[in-house]
Length: 100
Picture 1 (cartoon, helix red, strand yellow):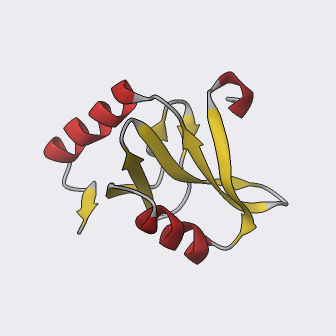
Picture 2: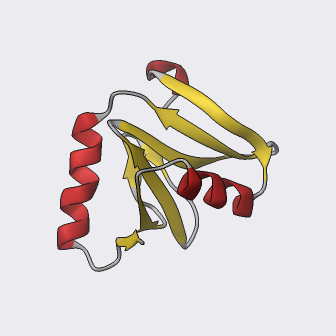
Picture 3: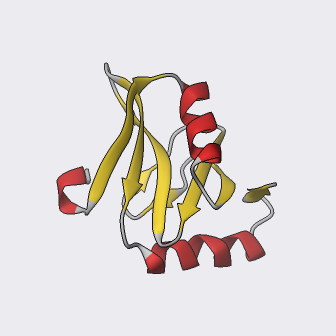
């Protein structure tokens, strides 16, 4: 299992609801993609049917589920390579949808 301390990160929202996470990511991102459950951001496996992943420059915003604590919004900083990976995946995979 991956640990957040291995990454340059910031917790933007914690102990919140799924809906609040989704709205926060949409509001504070330049671009947002809905990825299918099981999609990996770095080594973090995202849980749910359609999970918003947002970009703000080279930072990635995504919802993180911590059992017994609820939902969080995490920002991984300076992840240019990971941003490019998702954008490239969006062009190939019909399951990844860009949010307008």
